[in-house]
Image (cartoon, rainbow, N blue to C red; front, side):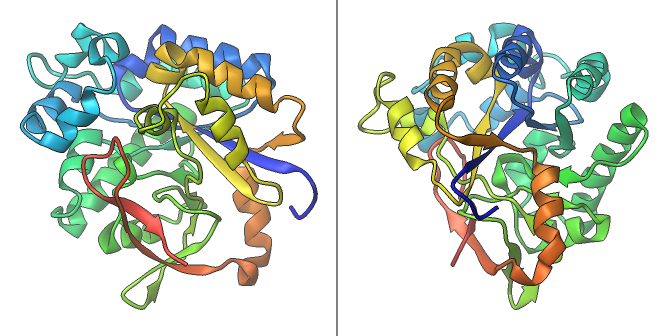
Length: 304
């Protein structure tokens, strides 16, 4: 992919019921309007959003981040009760028909773990067997819907370490997207090089940009557009509860801004297959940690 085009991957994370409501329909309509095929990563297990908010309620950093959005408008009061006041639904069961619709529209679907809250809160202390079980359950849910195992995996909240990467190796994914970084790479921790290709998120989210000191809805589109580079893989992440809802206007503005900018949209599996033809050309990079606004703890970061 060494030419004058700008390659862009739109990654859509489906983590809660709020991502599957009309917000998803809104986002699918926007993607269809611009003829974009995206990669959707789905949390296949329970929506425990209320439990997540409760366990982090007394964390000052988390409260400061939550104050930058309207959680009631973003998620809805009913969905904020999931896992706290009431048992959260199994997302892959409740929205099976919507997942099939996404696939029928030509988008790629990968898995985003099973219990999103459990992974986000406890992956650092989870035993290797627990991590493998979380992945196994999500893969089996996927297979029950689509008849085969998924090609891609993304760790909830970019939560990755030695044990999670080792578990991914055992499950033989084509690629994973667990990190923030600047280009596809093979991850390395403690002298071990893992075999699953990492396709990191390379661009800041609208949430991060709007939460900064220069936050301005009129300027974030231009600031983000300037970060999309030629001869580089650009990966942007969206959530239907935000970009299909409160941030839909600026997402549309971004796509409109890029419409005549020589952008080529590709899915994760297409990029992975092309890159893996010449594995020797893919860099090996250490995986460290990075603070990202909106994340409860440090996230996995590609180090040069």
